[in-house]
Length: 114
Length: 115
Image 1 (cartoon, each protein chain N blue to C red):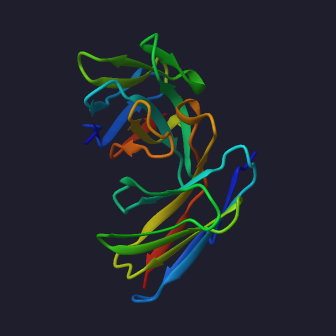
Image 2 (image 1 turned 90 degrees about the vertical axis):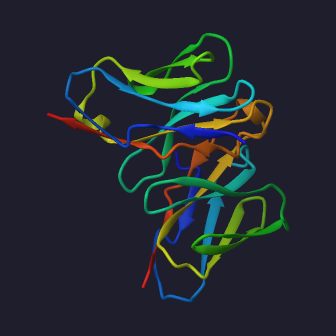
């Protein structure tokens, strides 16, 4: 059963252009939604965890700037800007069980810089 | 700050052979520890997790891992690998008592199984 639906799955991004990613949660039992980035060397790094509709956070990392928004209880968005190297962004969800819960991953959105 | 080290970037074994993938962590207390697997063009899937208690934990597909506090390690093992086990394996931790949403990952070990 797929808990998370990410789109787009792949995107070519012209240098200097921003891209918007979307993640839809299919099961409200896992309301803690997060974004992770995976660089070209496969290193995974946590970016954000947003719980409530209206929550927003920004972050600048080497190679990209991010703006995450929890739109609704089931939708999380990520804007990626100023990307200089390709990467894959994963949406995750986890449950109210806190530390005894499990982190579930979406299938990822792979971004390539043109 | 916590960290996870997977010293082997690539491991190659023959089908039917035993396997150990190494993971060392750095954290001031006992963390929660995880192993994830990533198949090509897919997201990560949880293999097993350790929170407390028996240091040997069983996971899916006959994988197991052993926690060692004295060695700060959480090595993954399998008695007999299959070609379908070829994938990238990640060790991860979260601080005990912290959110399970925020994990610190190692750089991964790419496993290739020769038939």
